[in-house]
Figure (cartoon, rainbow, N blue to C red):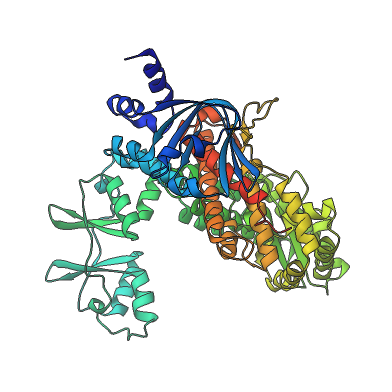
Length: 616
């Protein structure tokens, strides 16, 4: 093997996913590469015109290549970057790849590359997919990896199952089944016929197939049971049971032993064994009689977050679970405050802002909240709400939701106001979009009700959304303010990292990667009058509109899902290492493939910020 070929193999073999190829396949592939020396201003399309029919795969070894779209520089590619020009791109005059600085590149026609890697279709498909699809795949792979690392792999189903399984004869009535489940505290029963199990019924079946369908309660259970009942053997590993339930979308799995009914396995069983689960904590929150009890529950949220991550649950549902528990803690604090202070004489609503309002909160978040109360409130009422705010904000701080550094809390008199004052706030922010107004808009346009009279906020939001749809000036200012926060990706597809301080050589995933997508989603919502709060819901609702194409919407959703998954895994690792979770990620702490996906995500954000899809 020549020195040059050996050097090429070492270089190409470091680029994911080529690093997954066996050495023989890698050598076979690299032997097909041509070495091309290109001069400044050369066109890649022209240089590789012979590959026009199938396209060409190019790896930049040295120098700089830039991609232009309609004469505007879209991106620059340096050492180690890959460029795929398919046959469509050869004839597409809207795109071009030009050498910006004398370059040395390795290239191979796509059809030859496909033949060389015929036994490795995943490698080929990786490079032929759109970046947003690669990001989607990355999220799925991360979830699978988390599942495979779960301690459920080392435990059997028998260790988790409830025994014996509760049964009921197939001719018994639906009412009898409901009574038996209530008495036992079970949410499912196995249906038997002459000692053979022939189906299963759950509390959901009773609601959807009986009550909702208007069936008589005297109807026999065999009319609503699921007959194609799945089972699992007791000696199988618990991980198999988890996968079966996730794949089939079920929560109950009957367990057999030597072919006979043995017990019942549920998702809740698995979560109980993994650690404190959301259902258990929700019940504990409702029963808490003091702030100190709630504080102990709040201390469990980080471990719950880790446990849910180990179970392979996606980031968005985990964030919703943590957000729901945070809301529950807030609600219980308000109820405890009312026991101490008495009930208010006028209607009010406790509001949350930020990530909690969007149901995207994770453990160790700070608190963002406010109060809106009836215009009929007296000075005595105003004092009552001030005491309520102090009690709840102090309680949230004890529970791990620290005071907001920007003082966006109900304990700040500015954010504990009558409904008409809040209306005036919003109207002023929209009509006179000063820098402070834009900052307030980024927080308070995500408001949601945690407790109290929802109409107090809804009435305000409906009026304001009509204003924002008509105020092009406000949307323009909000857009320019939002796109100023660029993702940390340099012109040469390298990461722009923090240059000094305790977080040197890291990037802030929350503020410089996730926040830009949250900001874009908010702008789309305000411009289109979308009432949803969550980022994913806003993007789904805006996708396909005149300001966000379907393709751009899918790409942005994929980027967001990848980034929150990466942030969740970063936090989980920090919690397991008994460190306080932060959002600062060092690229060297993730795989080369993850770094590649991260660049794809940043590119998607940058394109949406730069394009006319953003409302100006």
